[in-house]
Length: 208
Image 1 (spheres, rainbow, N blue to C red):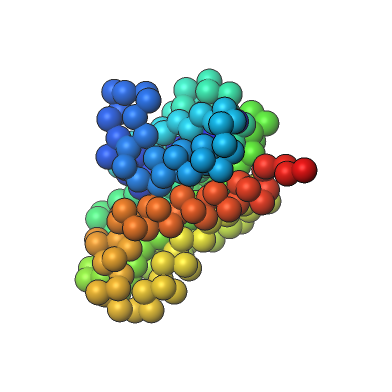
Image 2: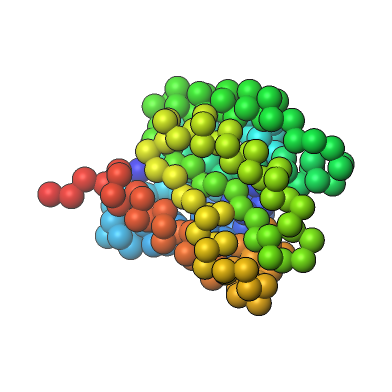
């Protein structure tokens, strides 16, 4: 089973982009370790294609080399938070139409490979100082992701709902999961990997 994980810094997990075998220190590395233990010697190849600062447009530009050329069995797609962050930084409205067109093309290209698609939703912990202004932009991005991606994905990881629910508006608790409200801590990365393992086990691995 070959699993390609594509996305931004949340997927990259501080990996060395010049080393194709480096899985970083985030959820991708945890996923690889746990999945190989689960399958007990079966051949599993997890590839990390995350790059810091990536937008959905960037993913679309790289999808041929990062996904199609890899001929994966499973693709884990994570992205969208940088589109939101760029809109916030520029103090301009979120371009929903452009985001929808790009996300639609990205999902269609991935699905055309025949790979199973798992979507990791973007998230922001709005109880962290300075992050509340992200909410309305993120909600618009999430509407597109739900509308475009859900019918084509075999599974979805609802990070925004999950992490905000766990934190319950408590900034000190939120920092246990994402110190800056956006990037998962090691604890959160392990949790994401566990959820992915569960999704893969339930949807993709056939047991006798």
